Amino acid sequence: MNPPVRIAVVGCGAQSQIAHIPSLKRNRFAELVALCDVDVRKVNHLCKLHDVPKHYVDFDDLKEDEGIDAVVVATPNHLHAPMTVAALEYGKNVLCETPMGMNAEEARRMIEIAKKEDRKLMPCLNTRLRPDVQTIRKFIDGGELGDIYYCKTGWLQGRSAWSLEGWRGQRLRAGGGSFLSLGTSLLDFALWLLAPSRPVSITGVAHHRTTVSDVEDTAFAMIRFDSGLLLTVEVGWSMLMERDFTYFNAFGTTGAALLNPIQIHKEMHGHLVNVTPKILTKGIQKASYQMLIDLWVDSLLKHDYQAIPAREGLLINQLADAFYESGFSGCEVRLPSASS
Picture 1 (cartoon, rainbow, N blue to C red):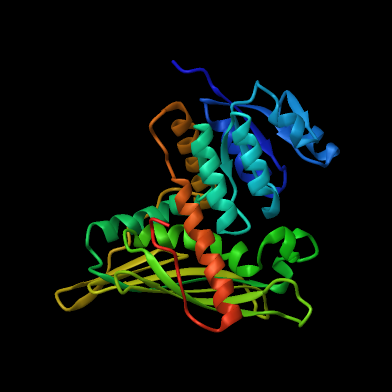
Picture 2: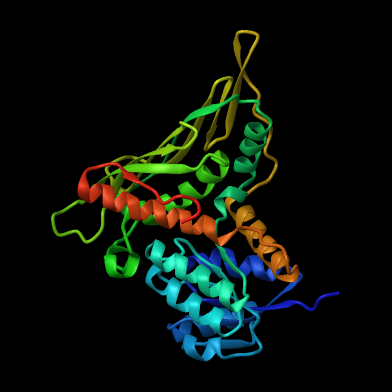
């Protein structure tokens, strides 16, 4: 039997506290041996709370620790690439929060270093693992919705739900605004559901709340696929509305599916019939992170197995790059080919 994988979490913000740390503690093949954060009080408190033996405030010290096999990088966006590359070069496998890099160039270099060092790099693409998303995938794969020809998805938040006072409001630290931050989660499961169709071009429009805003607060994109399928994406974190909501709708020739809540309808004998199955899992977002951690740890124990390829995180970065190029030029932008 393999010994447990010795894992450290770098960046102890809300995502780590709510998702990564509890999920790692519940995995019997993982041993959470260290936490790292620049806030010494926070990291000390979390180490005591979760019985973690080591704490670091300097990542350079952590990366040299030979008692660590793998690292979860959950820091602000601008630190994803440099920390991931450093961890890989010091012989550690990495699970990196998304977006993988500030841009596709960073994400591509991360993949190259992982290959060079013979280490595993996996992006935190967890929304595809939600039980409701998995259910829709089964209907699509089974051909029960026919040929999918149009999808739309969005994540719209009110002004009080998101603060731009920290790193998220700074392009040099975030890499982008609402499209990169909110759109990543939507593109995670949307691209997975629509595979093997691959996006070939994007048209993007970005809105800045003020002329001095460093990042966009609202974004709209139209993405074309090689199969002729069309996907629209809308995101925003400064909407004047009563409630926040996310959605996804997929329309096929014989049926349709939507999320939040999940509903699946099929055309049967000339009538539209609700065939939505019951989702018994409670806490679908929590469940998706647990599955992500379980898949990652399992892949680390199996030499030839990669649960979620890093190139899928790269594709999201390529879409984001093309979105910002399109928003600046006012033109449709084609994406690199799958071999690029």
